[in-house]
Length: 264
Image (cartoon, rainbow, N blue to C red; front, side, top):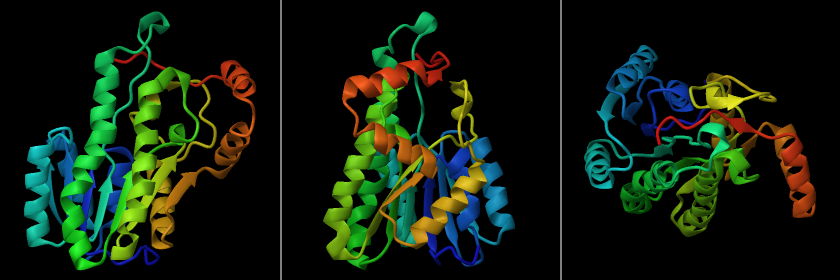
């Protein structure tokens, strides 16, 4: 882990599982103080135990990123004690079609937009002015390859992740003069509860720990866009050069199918 930059005070949302928990483990080290935020207190404590075993000090907060006022209080209180130099806005949910491939419900689409996009904005915004004043720090936003190539079965998810990508790019331009960096992460298939809902092939799937190590290495290099795996990124870039009707034909014949949404 010596290649990972020496961030001292770290915030991770969605830290109870998947990539969030793996990133918490990746950045845990002696001298690091970490705040883990998530909705499941039990899962947060399991991640916290791993973080402590690696020598870091850790606090947990069972909170929903869609509750912006509560989240702001938690973040500002932590920042006052431990000035944040790395915030990872990772919390996210997926959706999908209904039974018999019915269209996504409004409730499902709204839930994804609120947690994935608004939740990321709610996580980062309270820390922007403190980080700007300190003239240092890094913001990591978890998007998806679905931001680069929309997926028909998950229109709202694709929209939420594309929103994160565009917001992150704009934020990087805004913060550059202040010495605060932004990385937007667009992973492909990573083994997790969320990816388990994807039916059919998952090309180039990697474990959460492998993905976290890759992300940490590229954050250390100051990459603003971290998209992987490269074969899928290359295919997406190629498809984006094709007329839309041609790309749609290909996607129709090789669809990404999602299990029905269980959250309404």
